[in-house]
Image (cartoon, rainbow, N blue to C red; front, side):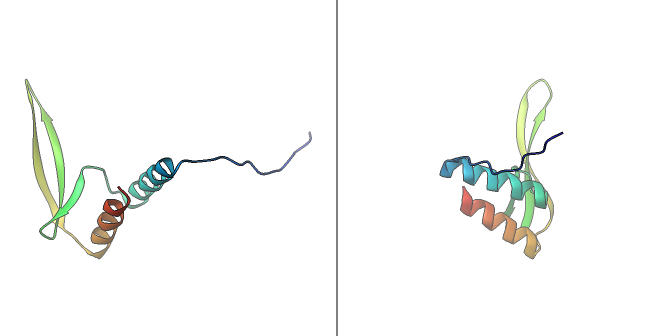
Length: 78
């Protein structure tokens, strides 16, 4: 069996590069796209479904420094 090692070069557009970074940070920090900070609290946009659908905002917890940093970074990348 012969093993060949080498490098692979790909070109990623700036938009795709940003999206990859956003997805990685969300996964790494458990920050869903529906989470946001408002008034010092971590909140989540939720869509409820029955015979019709409606959105509501749930307050999850008080935002700590990590929440604030992740939210700021992700908003900056958008």
